[in-house]
Amino acid sequence: MLKENLAFVENEIQAACVRANRSRKEVTLVAVSKTKPVSELRKAYDLGVRVFGENKVQELADKYEELPKDIHWHMIGHLQRNKVKYIIDKVDMIHSVDSIRLAETIEKEAAKHSIRVNVLIEVNVAGEESKFGVSCEELPGFVEEVAKFPHIRVQGLMTIAPFVENSEDNRVIFERLRKLSVDIKEKNVDNITMRVLSMGMTNDYSVAVEEGATMVRVGTGIFGTRDYARV
Ligand SMILES: *Cc1c(COP(=O)(O)O)cnc(C)c1O
Image (tube, rainbow, N blue to C red; front, side, top):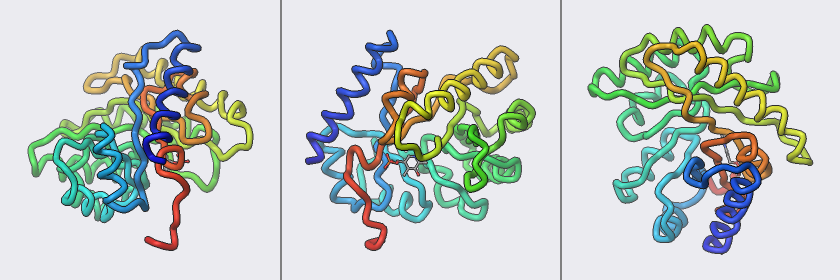
């Protein structure tokens, strides 16, 4: 099942790249493995998957210990400041920076390890009350603040689009995030790049790729539905 799912997702990404006249190489598939047992991740690993996304600190740290060290771990979920220290030296990228205080903590912990941590700024494009993320209006000033931290490398933006029946409805969200990243890029802020646009999940990653996503975060489409009761 996993093998077929991966092949399906890969095909969809390729097709979206063709439609958008983009190279497949521009898009990284993040396999979102939250709630899934290590045995499932190992199967995915054996099929060639090297980039995994998790949304819980403890779960990421546990899986990190158990699985091969050439895996790239992405923290995609809301991150509490007191937990940053448990994953700071384990992750390739933190997708969910949404407050200056969180950035300060990441800076402090990264400095302890003498590393620079790749982060994305999470943007609440749709302005949903229930969602984390910086508003579109706050974003430019926010990026300039985070750019001042020497142990943080802002690599781009991330958004979690609303849940919609028809993925086309999220096209405007993805378009907006891309435009925001272009506006920031044009300001040439020191110490940051806007090379990453993390947008698109199982229900809408094709549309996201058409709109310029460089990372799509796909869970259900690869690993099947999640059983939260087991966790
Ligand atoms: C769970 C999760 C995903 C994956 O969702 P699916 O709909 O299962 O593909 C992507 N991004 C974030 C931030 C998530 O928490």
